Image 1 (cartoon, one colour):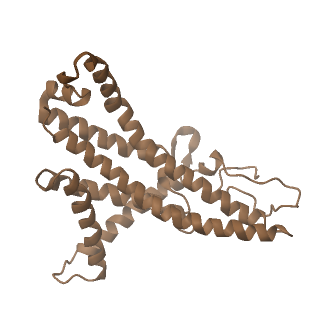
Image 2 (tube, one colour):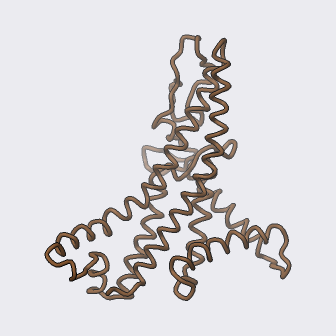
Image 3 (cartoon, rainbow, N blue to C red):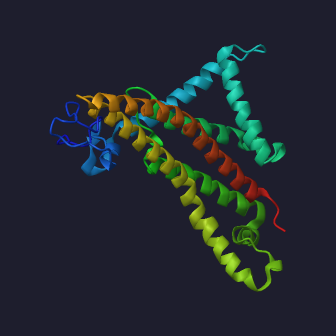
Length: 273
């Protein structure tokens, strides 16, 4: 391993099997980066994941601006792709979960969340970048916090304090003697567990996926020596397979995040009986 484990490459490029060096396995150090600007000790710095988050935001804004700045009745290729993506989230997620009447006002938020998360995930397989921003818990946590605050505020606004209490506790007097226990479980599940699992689901999948990609990528290079070349080929095939699988998971996790967001909004707006 290098003396500085926070470099972009998490392994020594001159280390191969039979050279007397151990396998440079990926780990937590693979998710640490030296500041591009500022001082990490002062907690005022700018590093690679922050840069990717900023660039990703600009990419999404630029894409939709270019697609819709001069919309046409007969759309061009770029406008057609943007409309297809927008319409998929609007109709396939928002309308199906919240309903057209209530959900229309939340379409911009849900579309923004989906494409932002998807772009942050996609950085994992883009050359040079090769790092999913959402594999750092702070980013999914902030996104989950935004959804959580929206859900709480909508529930209060729609139902008032008493209605909010009934909503988050799942109050149902037909439960009889088990009602207090059920309310307690629902209370902790909705107010504490919900935002945690919302963030961790995205983070854990991206963290695990990136670790596996690193593992097979590093192994392909490490085994590229002597008889190990045959094993390096197998590892490289696994790298390609995992990359293709990650493409699916990256889109799926963005979809799941916004689907859950819509479910929470729908729950906040629904009348409690």
